Length: 116
Image (cartoon, rainbow, N blue to C red):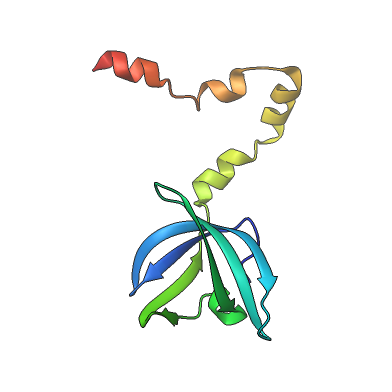
């Protein structure tokens, strides 16, 4: 089941519509239903609370106002996950306070603006 803090992609009528972050999942007064509070990640951001069954939170299609909807988890690309966890030699450099670890991964936006 998706859990608090997860980023999900919401499909509306089988088309990706928006991303949201799950803020809370609380039992509803109706048995086997949950109040799912999400921050919709768009401009302007907004907070919504949907009342859903566990199956819907897990990706089973449901309808809202007659429109098919689906919630799918967002998984970070493998390349991004690899960059988040430094190797053993990088960990040692971090302990020593070396900037070498980050020098190859930092892209200066000010340098890019000057080149234009």
